[in-house]
Image (tube, rainbow, N blue to C red; front, side, top):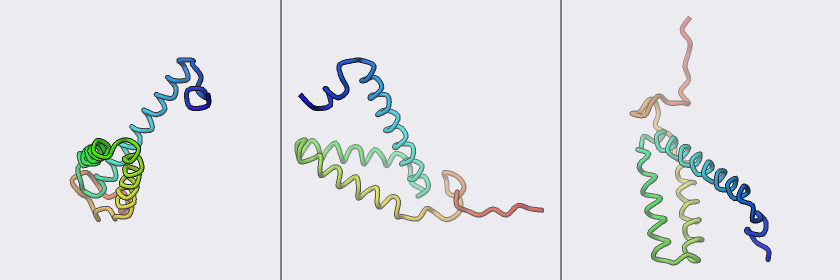
Length: 105
């Protein structure tokens, strides 16, 4: 029997490590997505739209079809987010991280 269960074994510590690493990857991805939304002068709550959209697609299409569809939609959203330029200058979430500062002498 090959598969995830066999590869990780039946030891609880391996599952705890996998779950912990997965949790931190999701947390890191959400934090960076929210930072990028703030750079675009958008609220981090827009991430909820993505989560709800993916959930609705999974619910209506079924798991096997929705897996590919969700990946395609997520990729398109990711490409749009990284392609858009941030707001020039400061916005309501802070200073422009790419703005050049000249030290006063």
